[in-house]
Length: 403
Ligand code: AMP
Ligand code: MG
Image: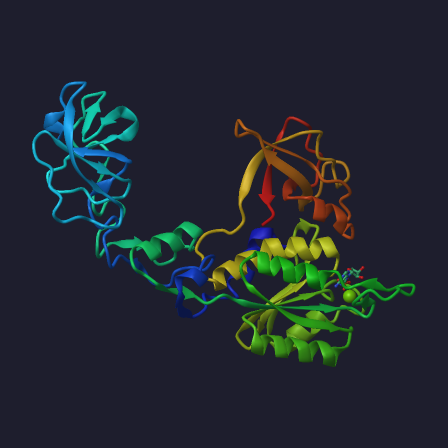
């Protein structure tokens, strides 16, 4: 068996970031910037008011109860160039409105009483109060979002605010998914003895979409050398990554690993983890192909541990896409290995949550067989259980959050 980290770095080494493309910023959320976003404009463009209230001269309002003469109003979006505030004067001003000439402070509407064309301030007003300065968020020419940044919804907003209507990002990876196995049935026809439904393919396609890649359904193939060969070649041609399910363990019909070795560079590994021990990974042409194990839970765990970081790398991400938290074990995590444990890192399907005080707790999601996908569906994390030994209630466990 080989350590998880060794297998993971081998798989990560199979891919490099894809080419970059330019697109409207509104379509780029979740993609990684392949060029800096540089501000064409300052944000804000002008000094403006942070409050709905009164624009005034602070020197006039050093005492509580000052009364000023109202000489006009400044609305957001329509700066009145002629508007000037002299000694003893004030203007009605709205949030976001440009600060008129002469104004050096703003008082909020709640702290003033208006009577006809005069306004009386409850409190003294310090200079510069409630004024947002031009360029406080970005100055023109500033690199607001550096290359390598994962574009968040706020990032879409920032790029838009500085006038970057189009951005350059690393292309979204196209990830093909194929399932293999003579026993598999698609659709909802009644099953004959020995058959089971091909649940991995739709599940993995959904997981791929969750990971921000474009899923490509490569269909199902039986345990037939020619058919597996054909689909892997076709997938490698049309996709940036191919994920297969099944055919990588020790069985007589486990042909994916055999064919992968024939088509390209490939490593067949027994990874020191449970579930998802067997893994075949390599390249066909220059396209990475990862042969995930067929057991339903194993295929999902394997996708998370190996597929997710590789997809992230293809997409240009520089961070680890998997979020880990330390959580207090409630109820105990049962042991999966006899006696003093084994040499594997066990991943236990769990439900984890964070309370209002920021305390994470974790409990088992139920049965842990690698064929028991229902508990995976009810889990939102995988707890790391080194050696598969029982983790008692009250201990702390590391939990990988499912995307
Ligand atoms: P394999 O890795 O091909 O030996 O498959 C291991 C186990 O996973 C067997 O019990 C298969 O029937 C099951 N299995 C393989 N592929 C799928 C699939 N696409 N959907 C559901 N179960 C599968
Ligand atoms: Mg099989």
